[in-house]
Length: 480
Image 1 (cartoon, helix red, strand yellow):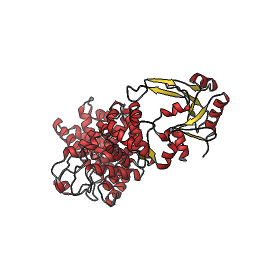
Image 2 (cartoon, rainbow, N blue to C red):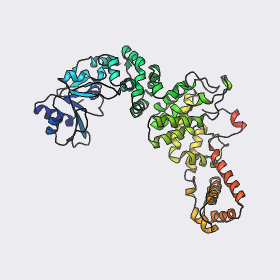
Image 3 (tube, rainbow, N blue to C red):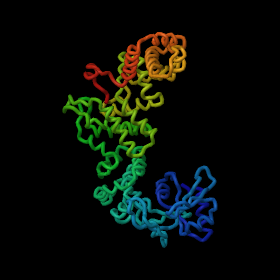
Image 4 (tube, rainbow, N blue to C red):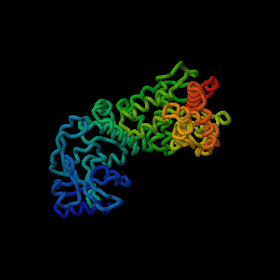
């Protein structure tokens, strides 16, 4: 593996100006592991103002002595250069209260989190390793630089980073480091939810995500990230499940990762049954969890908002949890029901909903992720995907209704649109201007009470997509 020309040029210019310069941190770790680094960081004894004189096309807008140099390269557009520094005081358990210039590279490397990240490399590719980082890389060990308690006291997020590195790299956390995490996990409460979310997402998106969740639990960190998951530990399920609620969630995530499903599906797979302990009735084979998908959607919404996920992500993942329990059996659910499911979940989320269902099945211990009935549902979804699924797609609108019935804006218009949508969902061929205008005339002649009743009936039918509320459903095996 070679050092990119953009990075070499920065090193050369600093050296030619009479300064020391080394590639440092995670990029050196990745270089040794023969992985392409996401970012390239350089450390030097040049001060920020001296760096900016050498690199006029740069900016310095922080108190951590870091200058960002623009390279005019699409491949590596920016390189961060940080002056050797030491740090003092971490009152917020995240950022240093004071940053000072370090005397030399040794002092700078001593402040870093883990041995595998406290490595430096010159232009000649010679590695400077003061803390046996290369040895730990070879032995696949995560170990702090110096005393673990000091490192975690300085920056509590490092405890989560230890889990993330162990998970993404497939390493083991050294015993003293692990014990220090267990003893000081409470410090994670001082870290912002955004920072916790970012580390959590990186764990979820790696190949060993399920192991990452287990590590968070073992080290006492999960209660500061997603404490709701801990409610599921040891909660037995009914005869349709081989695993308890927590094991089931982790197994579902494991399958979602194996199939390389996206973040939405991975999180929905992990959270889909998260409310089961809160709604459980009975014990053993006959225990039930009615409405766990509804309560689970609320819990998921709370978790994602607490972790400061975007509004779009919150809505998407919550919806996948809410509707993961959709009922579908070949010859029992009509095309109109499938259209209603699409209307509630969204056309762009249907494939993801089916993926959550697959992860749910495998997490339950069944051998097949996608049985015939799910394949048949996919066929139906594609078949009806172009059919109208919202009032906006009807060939008529509120203005047309007001024009035909000579009425002003009011609830009557919405009621008529609901009735028309119900008609069209049952038979898409009726979505024509001519037919719907005739229906509007008929509906306009109904009394206020008659129209209200019809609209309520249409709303109920539209809402029937998520499950069949009858005794047959309770007697059947739900794939949950």
